Amino acid sequence: MADNHLIDELLKVACKNQASDLIVRTNDRVRMRIHGAIVTIPSERIAPPSREQVIEMMHHLSSDLDSSLNIDSLQHLDFHYELENTARFRIHIMRTQNNFGVVARVIPVEIPSFEALRLPDVIRELAEYRNGLIFVGGATGSGKSTTMATMLNHVIQHRPVHAITIEDPIEFGYGINHQGTVCQREIGRDVGTFAQGMHDAMREAPDIIVVGEARDRPVAQAALQAAETGHLVMSTVHATTATGVLQRILAAFSQDEHEAVRKRLADNVRAIIVQKLLPLKSGNGRIVALEIMVRNSVIKHFMLDAERWREIPRAMEESRTLYGSQTFDQHLQQLVEEDLVDYEEALANAVKQEDFVMRMGRD
Image (cartoon, rainbow, N blue to C red):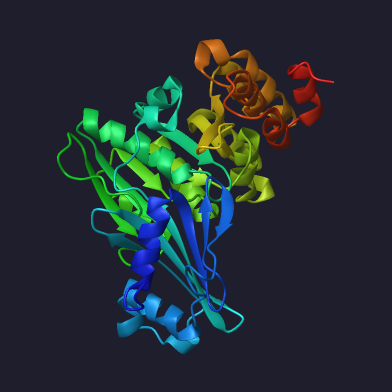
């Protein structure tokens, strides 16, 4: 490969091999994450890039490095990059041992459908709510942003809404030939912080607000206020269960606010979706495992009392047929029974492993 645009060639190779991430580091072999596993490219195929080559890649990817940033003082940088007719990429540049690395997350040009992601019908129904809070949780790389983009894309195709997104950085593009419209704002380029973006959004006549992450009190407070005033708010949260999402939001507030915040959450949270990506048993890709909490009167009652939050998973299991709620372990059982996920893989990801063994009838 020619050094001139080596990074573009590597990004194309990543897309061709259905990688989710490309990892490039000074004097290290190039690596990709394919179906959740790290794959190392042999040195004879692609030589480990030198410091100068990595810096050249960084300059090629970001014009900001040429105009406003001193490379010697750079510690990290996040932005998006696009290869026409190939894909968009979320780029993270990092300083590592006084050298540099680049991690590129592949963002498909087309927003996936509910069917392509194998999302249940209840997710489509949640997207059609007109107000309230929907949180999407999961670890980094679990597909939270993709699920929210699919939900929002569905809405703008079917309703004349005005949506505001606040992203770091912008990932998917929504186009303009829809009933609804999406105004996308990027942290650092269009607005300073998530909190400022939420503050601005209330003056921008939105029907829907999508905020990249409810990571602190100002953003959580603004999200609650927007939901209380009749907007639909969707946000990601780094948590691994539905009750973990609630705990993460509550923890953003001081102890003396907790009782009032629990009531506000109980009144305004419409649903919580938490997801993990698991390798398919066939070895050909990954599938999403979902925990879904759709608020009903029983769950709302439990949400009001912190001592009863531990009862929420049981209420989710019992309301699966009527409301579409489900725990991770319920869905993992289904995926094993449908021969989509290996039992050992499901067991390793179960929330309550001993109960999962009994659930599956294993010794």
